[in-house]
Image (cartoon, rainbow, N blue to C red; front, side, top):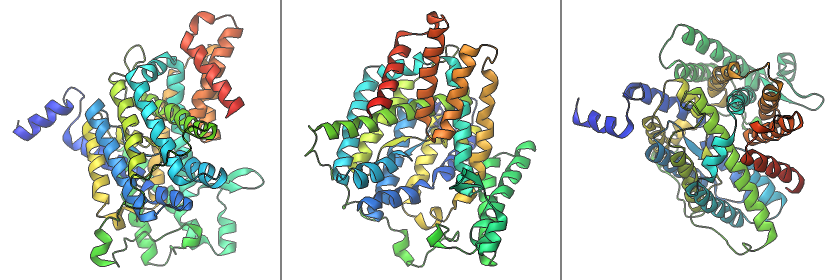
Length: 464
């Protein structure tokens, strides 16, 4: 074994985890490509507050890179971090645009939340919460996340769309053709469905890297369609060119300065009730989104021990907490563990080396942003849909004959896609688990911490 491979083995314990450098590389690039959309989406969302879009892009890249490296070093897990979807929307549209606070004040709330997060991680509170959740709910969280990320994929591909009458509905090819938008939107739906079928065939044939190949295949089809006029980009409909744009020459490869957002933290309103409410909202969602993702992805990778505990969870939680704090200083909203990490796990990623590869690709994106920003949502959608299928398999571990276990599990599963939130799924599951078992006389199954969590979740719905 070479000295380099020996160092990698000592640091990440590849043989112990049944993996190789090649497998971890494939897992890393797959995870990165399924979450690369955050490089385009996060700056767009946060720029609505007045933040400089280019500066936010650089901050997003560096915060994602740092957080993912922290995960690799602190916990040796194949989980990637980036500014969280939902949390960035809350930051921009609720805290700043709706409530009227400055984005500097919102960053300070994220910073304080991160500090509290670090303290909670050091005191084992978050680890205790993770361990208190029954195994049935952990299986349900994994299945629920599967449905959730599948729904994200269906939305990204526009296979499923918003509908005023029925809330959501299947994309209408007939309406698309009649309105003349088929070559803008309809063709991408077709391409994403082809991508799902292509990936499924590769999986059945046990082709290594099948999810990654599915992404690349769908993207290449998109490029061919654009070159031949079958796909016509229309920025007004958020349908952009899938061909990398190097028209800016050498400048296209240079990252934008972070100066407009770096260190812009404002503690002026720190002692006000409004600040506390905003900070607590960030904290609450971040805690349970992270716990839900760790439960779901680690269950998929069979990383939980016989008692349903995740070894080295303190390091994973600490990585998330430190990344959130660092991200606020860099100039972006809450950094959290991404459910898209499941795509890399599905490719065989088992150690922090996967995370290191993801971090490397994020860093590379600073200088190759035209390439990575050209990866369309409809190309990564097949990966999310297929991984959703793989994670749904956890449902077989739920004891459906015991209604005190299966009904809370069921509520956990359906709440995640229907409420569009991992944390809401956990909330529904915990509250229903406690109430169902308490009211049916099976109180010995409920730990003290589960009672506390149920009360906290109920209070959240009443007061926040």
